[in-house]
Length: 329
Image (cartoon, rainbow, N blue to C red; front, side, top):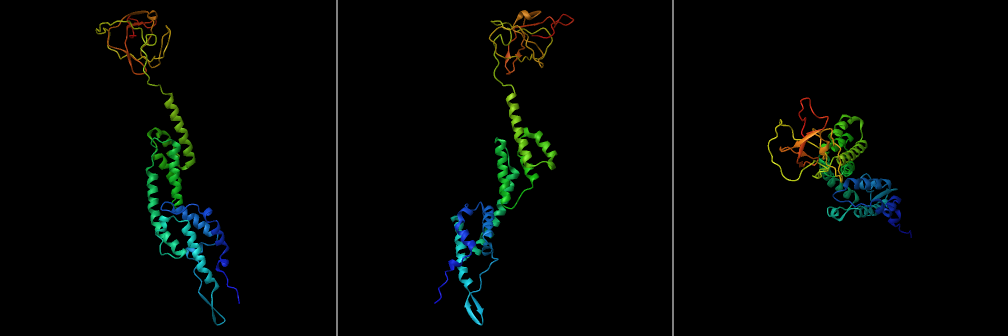
C-alpha cells in the first residue's frame, strides 16, 4: 500500500522560509496609517520568496482532477493548494493589526485578503496624500530651531515618497522657504534667484548657517540695561535743586550722549561717540568756560534713561568765531 503524501512536505521552499522569517522580515503590522510602507515591504518579501503570485491572483488554483490515459485522477497539486493558501492567509493576518483584521471577516483566500486591502487603502491613501501635500504647503518654522523645522519637512516628504507621490525637489525647497520668518528674507531671495542650481541639501546647509549668523547678530546688539546716574559715569551734577528758567540760546535737539560704562574712580577724559551731537565730561576743569544750566534739556543714555545737566560750556577748541558756546554740554 502506497504511503500517503503529507501536503506540508510538498510546500514550496520559499513559503517555508517566509514562514520561518516572517516577523523579522515584516516587523511592522499594518494599520490605518502605514499602508504604503507596509504594502511595499510585504510585496518585496513575497516576491523574493516567489509567493507574490499566490496573493495577487496571477497564480490560480490548479484543477481538482487530471485526465490521465482516459482516467480521472486526483491532482496532487490541488491537494497542496489549500495548504499553501491557508499558510499565506495565516502569514498575512500575523502582520496585520487586529483593528484592520476586523474588516477581513469572511475572506478565505490570500488573494481575497490582498485585494480587499488594496481597495480599502488606495482610497485612504489618496486622502492621506492630499493631507500630506497640504502639510507641506502650510509648514511653518515658527519658534522651532532650523534643524527641527527641516526635519519636519523631511518627514512629510518621506511619507509622500512611501505613498508613491514623490514631490519635485524644487517644490520642496519652495515649501521650506515659504515657511520661514521675515528675518530670513535676504537668503530666501538669493535661493529663489538660483532655484535651478540648488539642491535641498544645499539649502538646508545654508539655512542652518544663516540661523547661526542671526543668533550671533542678536548677541552683539547692545543690551538695554539701565545706565547709572553716578557723576563719575555720566555728568557732573551738583547736589540740591535749581530753578528751571528758559535757556536763552536758540532751541536745539535733545543732547544724545551714549556713555554709560561703570567706573570707580574719577576720570577727566572726554567721552565721545561718532553718532553723538555733544560731548560729556564729569570734570568741570576740562571746560574752557561753563555756567550753571537751568534749562529743560537732558542727556539720554544708551539705555534710554534721561540724565540731568548741571552745567554747559565749551572746551578750548569748541568756541566759534563769535565767542558763543557752540553746543551745550
